[in-house]
Image (cartoon, rainbow, N blue to C red; front, side, top):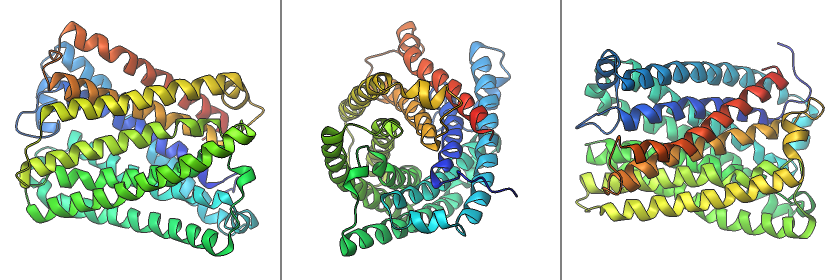
Length: 387
């Protein structure tokens, strides 16, 4: 296999983005297909609806096509990136990476593999009949999978922080962006993964392990948000943002989505097995807070990127190829995903909106638009990088 000279760990973001887009189309099935008594839409609910020939059948067919297509791109890019990384590890570039701020970009690897577990879960739920009847046997394997990705994430992170705390060689002159928050993104992805069995399992032990894992990695993520945001904004205010790393302003959007879903799942898990009654209003306030912050950072990031001509330089121009550009995909995916949670759990669950009403579908339009623009950018970058 030919090694690409400009390969770096940030190239894994291409695979991550494709996986996220696959999961984003599952949101239509999750919230539009009725699935009474089961926490998510599965094959047994989806395919009977598909065969009815209604408007929902069209939405299901449309979603299934894109779930498969982007899952294919995810695994194809994952295999390519893994092969490239194995060659990259033998290069001088890798040795240089280990002693710099950019060592943190290695966190894209456990981040992407954690997404792979989510993609596999979605594919299983959608295409495997009667899967929910054996789901309790699958949760321990999901926990093992997230423990593994969590272990590698912590290993990279502790090696990185140990070096910085002993050598004191953090380069503040190259920290005028929020790229360091890729570590928080990875921890949040592991946290939300643990929260799934924590919310859905009826086995108290699995439930407790899932919730503890979610809180462990989620707490670490929140702690690092305070540190990394403070350092990043301090350096940006002093030197201005690095143009190439401008998309890092949007990295807080997927982090907020993951931590928000984690908190929702933990709330459901405590409600199911720990006799802790969950108030519906808390879902409205939580989802409103998360969405508000995402909109604020979305507008700020877009304005900055328009002012420094980021899109013209690094997305639509063939001259500058930067793997960091793939960091644009996850915020678009995350905004759409959490938008669906906000509409369905924040508003519909509290009877602010009526499900399937005109207002319900009108409110979905901005989130669908963002998803469409994200897909557009993904294919522009995919063509540009010839992945």
